Length: 371
Ligand SMILES: [Zn+2]
Image (cartoon, rainbow, N blue to C red):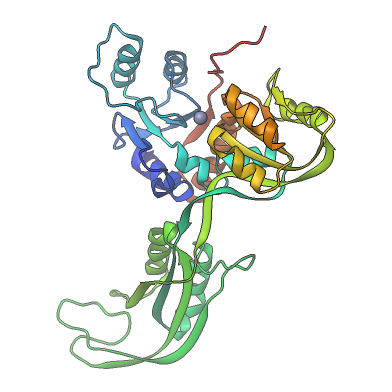
């Protein structure tokens, strides 16, 4: 098992949840501390509160990955006799870094909204509110015949060549490559100062730009040449639409029964419900966090019920008038994130042989109590 630092952990995390997916103006990335120190334990939290910081200290954590950025508006001062200042001072004193992944984690495949959709039993969930087009790119690379199979396999494993439900898609054509190794070269085939002709294969494949770094790195690693000849270009094809919220079908039930499903799935005691409790529920829209401004999309896409947090009184009225039922389990709808992200990251680190443990925070940070 390999000891790692914060950069290595975050590099893997950003493969799963790239910063480019974040909405404009969101505060994502490293917020407190540094990533160049070694990391053994990572705490995955919804919010960073003083209690969560105490938990991190007790559990010997070097890095916190938080969904809600603890620093959202620019700080004017860090006064250590205020709760916020005290918390930051404590984090720095204990060398604990804080990294925030907010709307980029909402949008990411397998992120907050996919975790919610899975918890609520949605079949074949689709994006509710598109926010980001993952532009398609093409990679063309020239490789000696005998290494082509291994290279295609590495590209497929890195996620290139995924088209719909097909993976490892590529096209190969045979040709002749020519090169003249200069001084200070150590050619895989041929020798310095002698023009060489090699039977090569032109391999081409497509990939979304969010995984470009990983695809190109995997390709170079699997290629035998010292200097690899390859081209990357942009395509005008429409890329995959990513975004906030999900919509999908559940087994037919009614609003009151489905509210029970939501409570059970998200581990909350109470939910607020808008609409006729006997209304049919089959198509469900869900959006983690505060989804007030997207209720009309849920209605437009034909949802029978829209599950989201922090519903305002007036949004509830507008939804009632529009004939859209709603369920509000509170802002803590996102707490499925803690276990979900820890599981994803454990898997990615295991593949890499990284010696690091992910701990879902056990502190409930919902400030509300129902009595
Ligand atoms: Zn939130």
